[in-house]
Amino acid sequence: MRYLFILFLCLTTVNGFGQDSTATKTPTTVKGTIISSSTDEPLSEVNIVNINQVKGVATDDTGAFEISAKANDTLHLSYIGYKSIKVRVTNDWLKFGNTEIVMTELALALEEVTVKSLELTGYLEVDMKQVPIRSNNQYRISGLYGTGYEGGKTNIATKVLGAIFNPADFLYNMFGKKPNEMHKLKKMKEDDEIRNQLATRFDREMLLVLLQVTKFDLDEIVNQCNYSKDFINTANDLQILDAISECYEEYKVIKKSKERKSKKKKGKA
Image 1 (tube, rainbow, N blue to C red):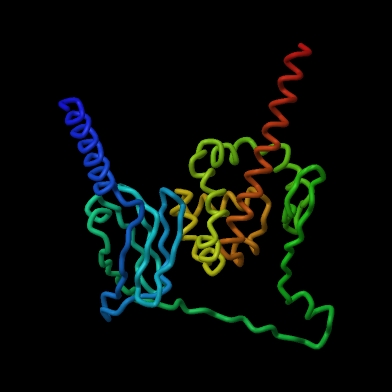
Image 2: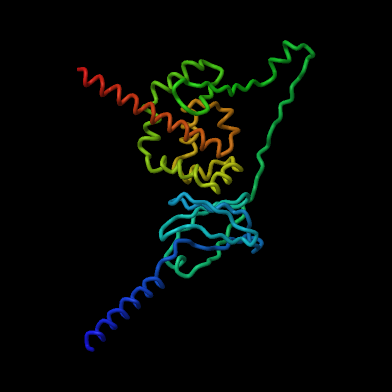
């Protein structure tokens, strides 16, 4: 009888411990509501990205959102006309649930733009010289997948071949020394919400935050991948992401090929 009592006591203790563990389990998502500081009204379609997990969501019509997160993750919040902010996920937020986040409106100032009209003369040969020429032609390199390389109008062949056979310095510094940031490229491409957000943006802000690079470095990466200034200036953020991703994948293929050739040479020597 005493043994049965001890067995019952053990089972009760284990069951109670299991219930306590379940009850105290830390949530894997955080909830919040975003409102405007000037109107106190909820903001819908605010872009929210978990920088650490590379997950994105947007607020609904009531300004509410829920996103996958754990303690110490950083959320990046952005909305047109409002100052972007970063919010750290805390244990209290995970434990107590919904929190209210206030975003501050920006004072928008439009720069003066001077439009130069074409002074047409009526002579086709003269007037054609006034029309700006954009050369966004792409050149395919046999043996490499992807849509191709976009070359400028000057020295296209040298520029493309130079990038293929001499990618080491700049691309290694930007890609090779930032493996964690570059691994985020795949995650960004796989997350539909982030892709949808990037497709409507042209400010590069989300790309800079996720890849942890400067605006100058980002432009230089795309430039070194042989995309023209016209493409860099007019492409949306999703197009820039795809361009960098393709260039990085091709860079890895070239790098591995060079390493194999180097090993073969050493083996023959």
